[in-house]
Amino acid sequence: MAAPADDRPDAVLFDVDGTLVDSNYQHVVAWTRALQGVGVVVPAPALHRAIGMGGDQLVAAVAGDDVEREHGDAVRDAWTREFTALTDAVPPLPGAVDLLRACHERGLRVVLASSSSSDLLERFRAVLGADDAIDAVTTSDDVEASKPAGDLFGVAAEKVGAQRPVAVGDSPWDARAARAAGVPVVLVRSGGFCDDLLLAEAPGAALYDDAAALLAGLEGSPLVRPVSR
Image (tube, rainbow, N blue to C red; front, side, top):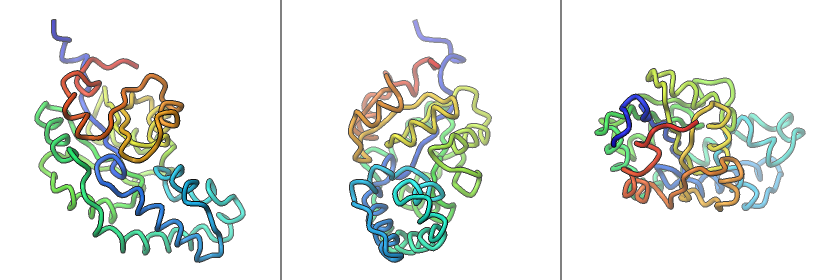
């Protein structure tokens, strides 16, 4: 017997980088160059593990509080320049556009919830070309603290009046942010994080290789099954 409609999710809150567009490694390159500009070298693997955090928190996380105090704003400004120059090389991830449309067609409200600025998110919306399936967006410009704080997912749900949202992300920081917001999360491996790191922040979460795999298994996924909190 089908579950009552009011037990099912009513919105999907999508992370963007690493979940819908293949940009995580461009982020690593941009942060590497920005930090080197102030004389700070952070190994690429350490930077990759921090991708998914907002820039307001990443500098201190990878380079320490002293670097944040002395250079944080300069590093973020340099990162914006470096990353913007790399965005032309960022494609949608396999299945991402079709997944957005499939969710929308099933009556789910679709929200993009990104730690990026609104300017950068607009670039990725153009890359996706799926505005017909997107009901709202939330960026770092809308909140005081970006991921892993729960604000982005919380505001995303509020924007569409969602009562039973589910988040989709690719990083441990998405998982932690969803938990902070009290939102169930579905995780994808397309951001390059290992299962242990992902599931440490969301034990028991549904895990898929990428958006295409989630789309293929959509009917049995937590995006359409009754919400469990």
